Length: 422
Image 1 (tube, one colour):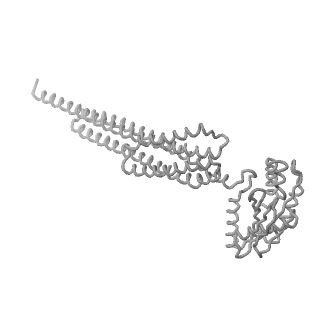
Image 2 (tube, rainbow, N blue to C red):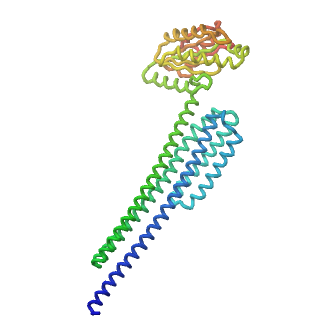
């Protein structure tokens, strides 16, 4: 064999060996890079899964407390409490699995989550104690004003952890994509030196690089979809919590028997009207109404009949007042009506209309009943407490004068006479 031919063959063999070596190195490095990316992505997915488990546990505990207050007729203590205690154990187990995987910054967020969770657990125990002791309104107040406001930032911290994992995954994918691009560049350079064979190897390398890029793109799309689904799930849960929160707010401001506003809600309405009176001088007045001899109804016919009377009275009051006015059950058989944008002389005809409606209504089992009413309109320099006291004094005067009548108060003496409100 001629020397030039041997050189050509040797050179050709060297080029082939170079390309084989290059292909081997490129394949091996790409495989290692892909393996590293897979490990990182798998780790991030595991962290996201654990974070979502914590979120689910927290949401389940919150739903438990809400169901205890909203659906107490279906609440079975012997079955519910062991399930609730298991949630606490599951939270601790999930947290112990998650902590070793977290970065220093993520651990700070987790510590903030733990602090909020401990506060919420303490408040949950307080709510349960109040509920079991029969203080349902106080339990609702604690859940509404303290537990739910602390649950929102806790879920927000969990969202921060999830977002951090998403950013880490994107960084890993970008790094892998950069390494793949660098590998393709090296292959292209050696392919030019190796002439025809190098071109072939370059094509193979480009094909492999595109395949790798496609796999990374598919993985990125998959992760984006998963993160989107988890985010949508969290948003749906937050929406459910908000709806439950609105229901608790409605319950906290509504009398459970009559469906009217309760004393708490009426106080809010009075302060709102008082603020409007101070700013725009729009007067308002109140009518305090008490059912005459209502104790006899309960004593003679039973409390169930008395409750039915109160329900029917609530319907009468709502149909009798103006659309701009408000009516609330002030306590027992006593009601309070807030008349907005009104003068003192306008209160008497409104009160008389209501009194006559009550007196002309035939109540099942009981028959006819009567009511006494006391009216008062706000004046400059008077507080809400003084306004209510004046209406109360007018109501006492109506009672003392023989009941079944309306008395309008004047802004004079606030001393309260003694009488029997039966």
